[in-house]
Image (cartoon, rainbow, N blue to C red; front, side):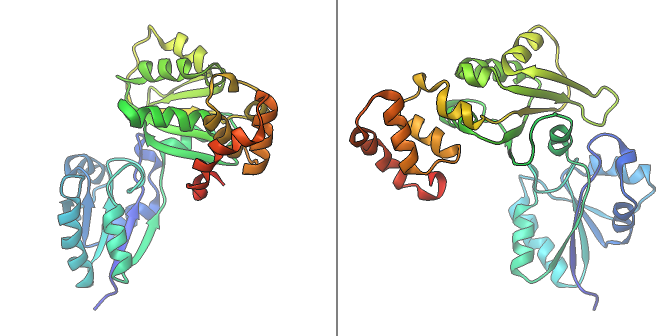
Amino acid sequence: MQAAELYLCGTPIGNLDDVSQRLLATLKEVDLIACEDTRRTQKLLNYFSIKTKMISYHEHNEKERSRELIEHLKAGRKIALVSDAGMPGVSDPGEILVRKAVEAGIEVIPIPGPSAFLAALVVSGLDISAFSFKAFIPRSGKKRQQFLEELALAKETTAFYESPYRLKDTLKDLSQFSSELASRQAVVAREITKMHEEKYYGTVAGLEERLRDQEIKGEIVVVVAGRSEIEAETEGWEDLSILEHLKLLIGSGMTKKQAIKKVASLRGLPKSEVYKEAVVISADKDKFE
């Protein structure tokens, strides 16, 4: 019996010429292709004259289908997992199947391919020696507010996806969250690798104003620069609570002790008063210390 193998296949995010020879060979040789949308994948297969059998694997059947695919793999079959575009598991289904395959001792092999957020990062001109990818920004409520707070505190460059229908509201929310966040450099990239690819560069506030009256279509990646250490220490803290100020400084690389001293000094408060607020941070050591 042949050894079972699960291939995680990166597919083109727009331009079919970005396909790799290794991907084509894999899709031809496997026994089954599990795909997010069989109609979308069929276009790719037709373009390259690939006849391999497909099976659907998407967010609505992921749990049930994962069990079925694991049985196929245990029987020695080779399976390729693809999403509609890019790498499976990155804002797309795949995590459950990969986890079950690893638990079952099945070899998982990546076939790297294009990624919209990575493409946007490298053309951003921003510091990407460290970065965060946040998938899609929450639409509303506490989760959206938390996203904005984390973005304001982030020291590293952050990339996330957004719908063209909500992009203007998101840029407005970013601009209004704080003057510091509004002044950061950012990029809005749309339709990466496609015929109508465009990149808009500027500050968050400048992009909000520039795109306010434009009709934006297609798939969007937003990239926002991180907060510099100097800014984190000395600027924009007046609108923050003591706790938010502490988290901001710790996020910029300070120890909790250093942050308490700095906040007390900037605000003209006794260190004991600031320390009382820092107790909350101690309960979440992994995140803030």
